[in-house]
Image (cartoon, rainbow, N blue to C red; front, side):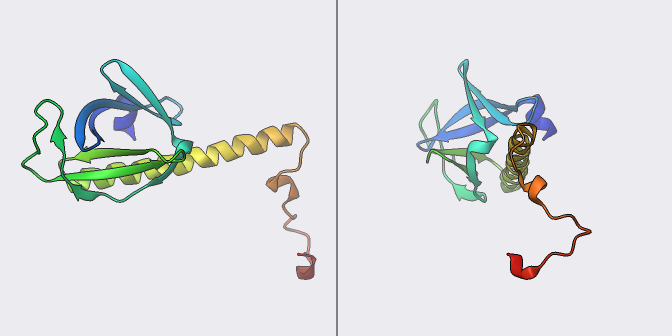
Length: 145
C-alpha cells in the first residue's frame, strides 16, 4: 500500500503488449491512478468487480513487439463495465502481492462507500441498517422474521 501511495512503475498489458505505466493510489485510497505518456486514467476501487489470482502469461514489448524470453505473471482486474486491466510482473510473488493488496484496498473502499451512504441516510433521517438493528438488550421473537 505504501508503495502505491508513493507511486511505482508497472507494466499494463493492452492486447498482449506491455506498456510501462506509472501507478499510484490517490491520497484517500479510493482510486488507482495510471499515467502513460502524460495521459492520466483513474480507476475507482469501487468499480473493480474482481481481482483474479496471478497466472503465467506471455507479453510483448511495445518497443520491439517481440515476446519476452522470460516468464511473466499477470494479475487481472475485472471492472464493473466489463473492461479488464492486466498488470504484468516478472516475479510470481510480486504479482500475487499486488493482487492481494489491491483486493484488500477494494474491499475497504466498498466498506467506506457503504458507510458514507449510511451516514448520509442517517443525517437525512432515513432508516439505515444501523438504525434498524435490534438493541442487544431486547429479546427478539424468532418468529418475527
